Length: 374
Image (cartoon, rainbow, N blue to C red; front, top):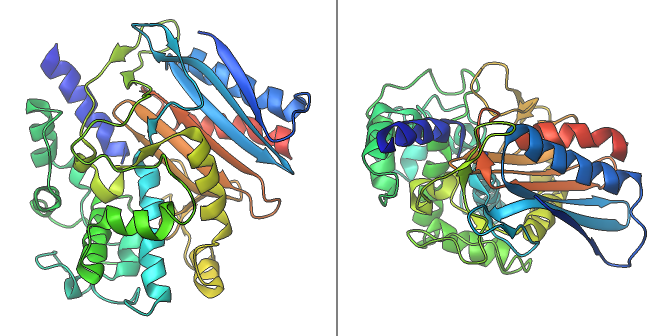
């Protein structure tokens, strides 16, 4: 049973790096209107159909920010999800890492056209792969979390600690999938390398750079990179869901350093909602850089990669779904989404404490909500 579960959970990492209910109004209390009811209903339905124990959603629509929770943070104890529970953000971490890279671009400390070999030794085709290629998922480097070396190691011990050097060794053990900038392919290896670039340029670990340049200035106090430690309490426990009407299975909590700059952050629904707006508005970047990040030239259709997370297009640490921009995350017991609508200023963030057959559950929940916000 342990090996079977480990194998299933290891496979779910490839797409990473995804009871009772209550609602809460932030700001002036007003009766819940149709869009709030639609958001709560969409969350409730997603938990029911997927078998995921619990989750939370926060929506800013017009001048109102509303947050709803549903289900269980801990099945064994029956503890319900609260707005203070922490969830792993998984691949939404990529949006923080790439934002920090773009801040260094604004400071003139690096260029997106620099080859990665300028900062990191030993990268196959590193003299041809640019930082822009890494940020846009167009490097051709294999996804480390899908390699036999990484998968085999997880089957032996899901909870082992990893260094970035070990992660990159697993990635580089396989040949590149295609020539640099030939096409789009979602690969966690790209963002691991960008984390290495952050450390090379600043002399600090990538997560300290993100903390100092993004989290602390914007008061995102619950967003943390726990490294080899557990996610701080209160925690929504991670589960593998078996589908509607089936009991979910509690799974081991993997260390954040197995995901590193590609998926290691965790935090509350409130801080993820705030990040959705910060990321979407581009307020941490120079206007020219923010515009470049969301331009048609930057965003690539995702049709080249059948294993890509659900996006219409993907750019520099940011994806697009139905005109909204942001990021999603999935893997090993958690799924999340943070999206912003440039046309209206609305934002949506979602966290779930389960993975299962639907690797894009937050995106599907999000799409069900959109008619109520239009």
